[in-house]
Image 1 (cartoon, protein in one colour):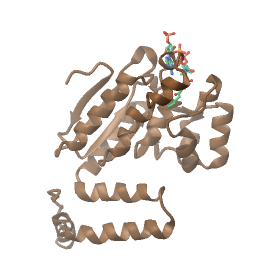
Image 2 (image 1 turned 180 degrees about the horizontal axis):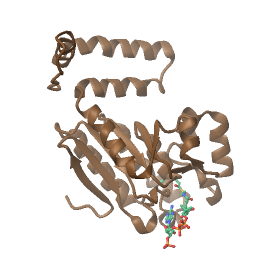
Image 3 (image 1 turned 90 degrees about the vertical axis):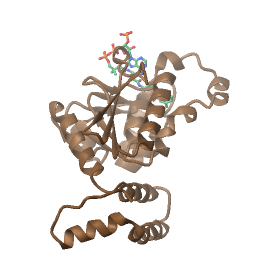
Length: 259
Ligand code: CO8
């Protein structure tokens, strides 16, 4: 498939890498890019060989936000009737395999929101996160006011949404927004390393773990714990559970078949 706003490759036959590719606009996210990204995410999700997906950008920008030029002339009717955001930003939420955001440079506005829609964020030491929409007379529209407080707490989320200040990588890790920070030249190595570890586990188990962690944000503790227990019990019906435990007991490496 020929894409104009993303680049796509497969690493080690099992990790799908999607690079946002509008360098002149600092990867500003327009309709075409979000459509292409959504299409490719669904393609990788449906590919049996792929066990994990990475979304990354350029050294200077993961993504500097939604495309302001494309948005500038929108009326309320355009945005509302056109289902702006929902129509192509939420595909990522339906992806069942893990998606890692490998972030260097700016992750602002919709760029920060896209990173937060991924399952976890690995940041380069030059990463900068922010929700500067308030400067443009709007507020975050792709989950920023909801996911940011869940990640960093109310005080920092309010600070960022109301003052438009950026958070550097050190603060982002300290606050729980990102899981790891590495040197810029080690970013892809680190993200690929994590993705390969995940891709070598049982796909069924990996998807169940992702589903269960995500449930924590949608339910009470007791409902979430019950949801987790049902999934845990169900994994005893898989061949991969038999393989994983047999391999441990017999001191050998497990060979998961994703069944
Ligand atoms: N949209 C469109 N073009 C952009 C964007 C953007 N978000 N960000 C940067 N660009 C363009 C610039 O216009 C410039 O283009 P040109 O060379 O033609 O003038 C080029 O990228 C390079 O940018 P700068 O010259 O500004 O580079 P600097 O290094 O000086 O500054 C910054 C980098 C600080 C990132 C700066 O570009 C900036 O502040 N960008 C805007 C950041 C921003 O406000 N983001 C939020 C956008 S609103 C949003 O995301 C709402 C999300 C709602 C949900 C999604 C709905 C679809």
